[in-house]
Image 1: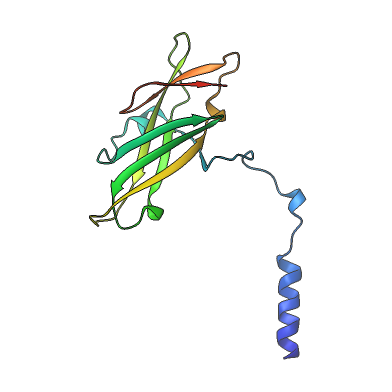
Image 2 (image 1 turned 180 degrees about the vertical axis):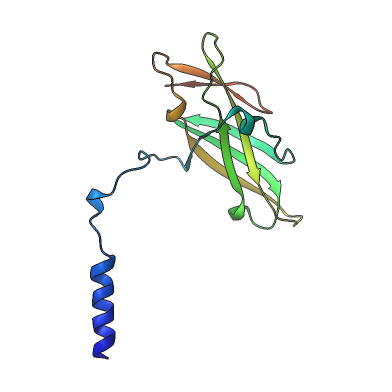
Length: 144
């Protein structure tokens, strides 16, 4: 019994670390995820086009996307939003975006999943709005 107490005590001391010294990788956000900025080749790779986009809304700096697809459980879906580092020169500027869904489920039930993405990484200095061209959707204006 004493040995168990000693092992647990050592484990607790070793496993504790000072959180204040940990580097912060991504800024705090109320959104679920960040946009993946990828190469042109990765962006142009065809994806799964079988899902449906039910709703897209911008709320402050978060883009909320609701996706409908078949499967066994929407919790296991991987939803990402892709873009490149380039912008289309226009007034206002435009940015191409693509939704990528990985859903390896073979069930016939239909589910909806909503995910929000932080748009701050695509803001352009000196601009205050961007037209978002999301593949398969109408343009949407992001004002910041």
